[in-house]
Amino acid sequence: MTFWNGVLWLHLLGMAFFVGGQLMLAAVVVPALRGLKDREPLRATARRFGIGSGIAFVVLIATGAALASHEHKWSDSTLHVKMGLIALVVVLIGAHARRPQSHVLDGLVFALSLAIVWLGVVVGS
Image 1 (tube, rainbow, N blue to C red):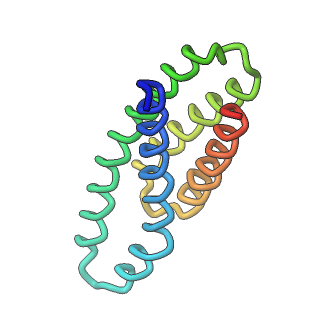
Image 2 (tube, helix red, strand yellow):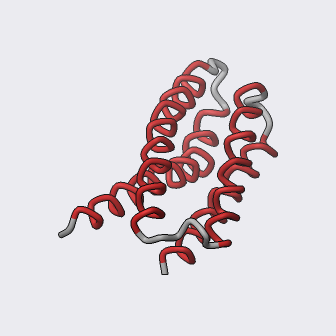
């Protein structure tokens, strides 16, 4: 295993946490906790996921930039589209932090995250 395999592994691990966590929240956690009268367990879960997602996002940015430099991908138009979608997701996450009840924002962040994963596959191939 080379150093760059390790960087790629960290990038994929960050992606799995970020996107997989969204899927787990949407498909399992939120439906299971939504019916509770006490909303605190749902809020606490969302806060914990937010912290983990923030860490995963930093890992994704650092490893993604390193991989793009190592593989000389900065001029790749697909990477530019991916970075634009990442910027849009950051804006939407900020909006979601202000309006956590907005299911439209949840859906947009998740759909764009899946598109970013797809573009990552395209850039990496």
